[in-house]
Amino acid sequence: MSIVGKCPYCADGTVIMEKKQVNGKSAKVYTCSNASWYSEDGEVFELKKEATCSFRIWGNSLLKWGKRGIGIFEVKKLLQGEDVDVRLYSYQAQKEYFKYIALDKEYGVSVLWDIEVERPSA
Ligand SMILES: [Zn+2]
Image (tube, rainbow, N blue to C red; front, side, top):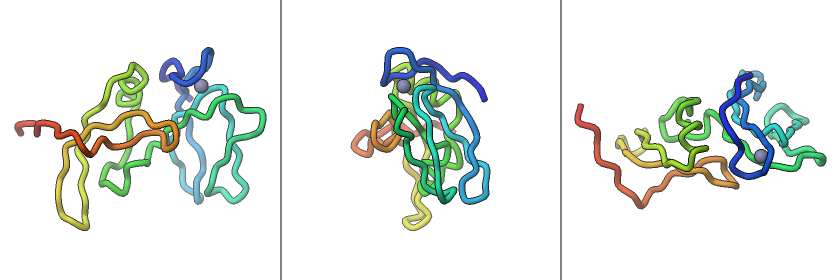
């Protein structure tokens, strides 16, 4: 468990990184110290009643866009209110995208599809 930063959604929460078993695999999640989760089936996690905050970002949220993990430095930036540029890839379209991600209360993070990020010169 490591401390990532101050929770943006509540007054006294700390965002921590932990690992949870999801579908029998270890998955990284960034969550608020005031949020606690339970899962009946080891697949879907729900907020416990006593939780006062719902902040969480699953490390693999962007897996379907070809991004294997969201790193601790990326989450630190997001917590400081910065958008983070990412390289995404659609296997279906066989296309690369350079976009920003931002905090999203419902999904943890969301991709800002409308904004073009300048491609890094390789
Ligand atoms: Zn919080």
